[in-house]
Length: 239
Image (cartoon, one colour):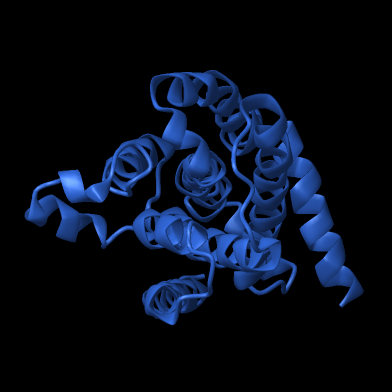
């Protein structure tokens, strides 16, 4: 257990030295929040009602889809993974360490937005903080599960960037954080339900823990975890 916690802590510290990951976990989401928060609330004062949720969805989606897969692709797409086999360290350990480290990073970033938004932009604080953070943690986990699958499946960082952008941009545009999903054509509204950001946003703006919004996320999470396990088993057989 001590070795496992050490691995998570080490990965957490290494993330701070990775400029690309640091940008997607903290710098870009918080700069976007500082810049766009004022614009959103100036153009539409009603945006204050969901500003915390909107900015958090953006930050988590960016960190999980554009940031979290990078260390995995660099490791599993190279010969570094052979060192784990030589050291008799299971190949799932780096993926798990990366998942937990990213979860902590994104939770910290989201907490900063939660406390700063009401002060800086007079944003409405969620009525039930416990339900909000439970919903947030669930959303982060599902998003990171997507990022983990990307990191395990894609072997080069150049391909990863293109594929991740293909998921990241529709996630934001169809989630409802920019404009109400009711304004979208029915086809695009249905497509938006494929992405965790849509379900996460709807759950986080609710005052209650709506199981109709929770269950799809849990099912998505379990499917993605099974895909990750299957991929890791295959990698273990190869090496």
